Length: 216
Image 1 (spheres, rainbow, N blue to C red):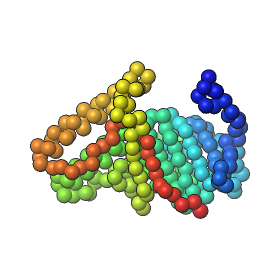
Image 2: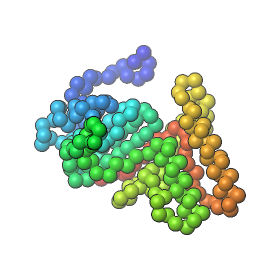
Image 3: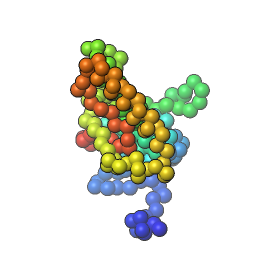
């Protein structure tokens, strides 16, 4: 089965470290990130990676240590239709503070993130600005704008026009259906108010592209 899927020549990577194109890359899977498997166990306290990659289902970057160089990117691709990227701007991604209830939060700097809710929030913010002329309180990270210094960002469809038909029966699509319904209602409200020209949110599976980034 692995050969049919194109993984017939896979190589085990027990340490989560590899080199590609001269870059030292660290890989983590979900809870491994929160447990510090890469930064606190595989690497010495002074060791760094050029890029840190996290694949997960419910994790986020700030819940675990980041050991890239200052300005080095860490990317997270989550199974719950979310992406994140941080640049570890000051190189303090290994430092943490305890949360009031439990767990730690790490000093990773600005954490850019995008998901279907962020996309809808961005559209609502843009719509409020269009109707009222004020942008205060309407900026969300994600499509169209980012907090802090600007980072190039684009979100595009992952599965084409028939994505819903492809996923039905294999994946829960109810949240996308509800988001599309809300979008339709808000479209009607905006049309009735005479406001137009607001970029539409993407309420389907997407690919989020951050960058290009400059490596130190």
